[in-house]
Image (tube, rainbow, N blue to C red):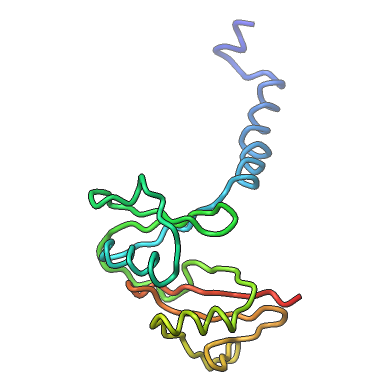
Length: 156
């Protein structure tokens, strides 16, 4: 017994250790919600964009004027976090929203002043802001801070 406290670990402890660092951690992450965290330069401007243009509902306890973060409710009980920091350059999609009718969503967002990106590359070509890739249609736009967001629809 004393040997196991200060000496070599027992086989039972080795199995427990291997379980804890592999299976339980992987299982924990597999069942854990994920929250995009998006950097913004002007938090107040970004909060207005996400609330008024995208229609996301703020989580009130994290959206007061003294906080350096803002959290918004999204679909299926997911959350999105904005945090203030200096300028950064992200030339990739930082978050995507799944929608049921992409054409309708694009039109509604355009009415609110959102400009959709147009791409003409071998892997992505858009028509009227929307690309079709297999069974998925997608459209990309920038938020008030220049972050690239996407809306997509899986065709069924």
